[in-house]
Length: 174
Image (cartoon, rainbow, N blue to C red; front, side):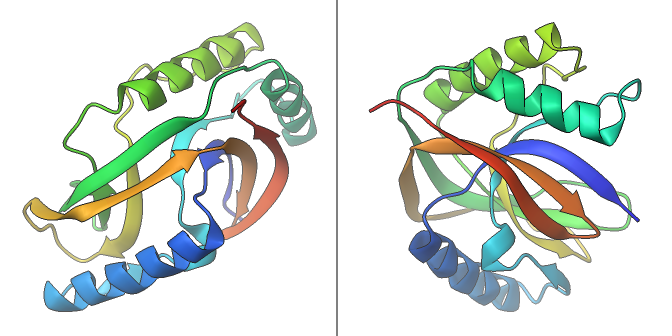
């Protein structure tokens, strides 16, 4: 069984449904083959919450506890192009932003610092994106009409063999 634990932001359900439909059209237009990410699993990963020295229940408890301490105002996200990341056999076809998404990166930095204080090892690298498909090949970057939303909360997700289980959700202040 493949298990992952991570913090993420998921836009509102209606927007995720629209993004999933748009993503499917783009994948067909690019003639990509692979596994589309369904609307229920579309998200922006903020940080993996895993530590080899912790059991899964301990990692969940620490992640939930630290999430309650992270404070931030609501912040914007805007993705305005699609493209691929290179992978080993599977290539994520993603939405990304041409802007730096400074507010999102700042929030992620605060979350990362809280996670490190709680015993998690979190990489410093962060490229905000939303994976639409795990594709058979890469495609070049391509501009799209902006897809934007306000990040109003973040959640802890347990991914077990691809199923996403929400283990907590914390609001950002208005």
